[in-house]
Length: 354
Image (cartoon, rainbow, N blue to C red; front, top):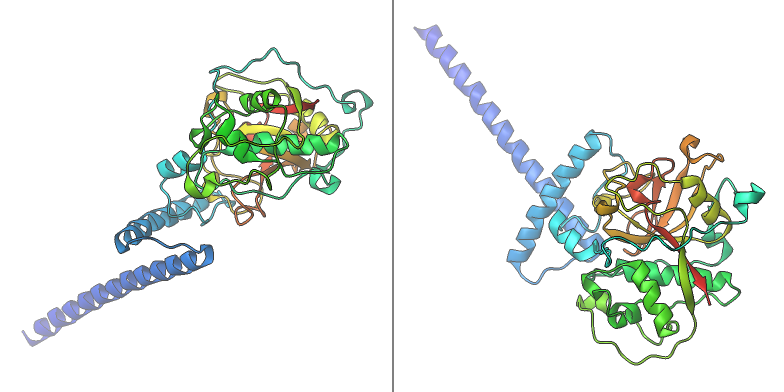
């Protein structure tokens, strides 16, 4: 009987120790995520109006952290915790992913650009238009679904400079507020953006018509402005466009020829998981179909092209985003070459400078 009592007491003690150890582990993990959240808030200058809001954002942050851990375990090593970690997927899409094809199906009657490199066979293995001095600094669209306007303006800036003019920062705010075909902070389309700029006779500078919608989240009323340049005479496709549900067979070699020898390109993509991108060649989830496109950016170069996009295993595109330079690779994202990653070649356009 004495031995039995000792055995029961020992088992009870061991079980108690396990419960205590587990409790300590849970407390430690909870404290760790709280510290991580506090450090994250400090890093990105995050503040919340109420304790309730901060508590809600902390819960979203915890969910994001768990999701990223799961995705990295699945092999998505380019994903991590970013400044968007306190936003749900629905909130992020509403704020940042606002490509809206106004026509439903794009006008495919516009011709595809044919670059000199297509005939001269001189498409370089790599190209970065920043090195040519025709790409302005990375911008921040802020709390406004104006990606389409930034992509529109950035493309015009680059091709304006390539036409022999001084590289100029033009005004995305003018396009956001004055283009009545598109929906301002609620979304739009680069193609109709180009058409607006053509009808307006060009663009004001950023200095004369500064961007304010990012802070306010409002489209704002169109103000009077003075055109300083950026006159557009239509647009062309950098490779044949696709308006299908699946666009897996896009001609990336023609895209490469044009981006390698002519200019950067305005592109629209599926950026649904870009919120978690931290660097390297993107290996997260995205689709290439026309109806999956939700964000517009600028393709400013590439690396590792062998002459055949489908056989360039180390090839990747250099894409400039409009989420500031504290996201991704100094504001850039790299997309794998040869599979129309995220729809990089689904709708790629260049403008004609008047």
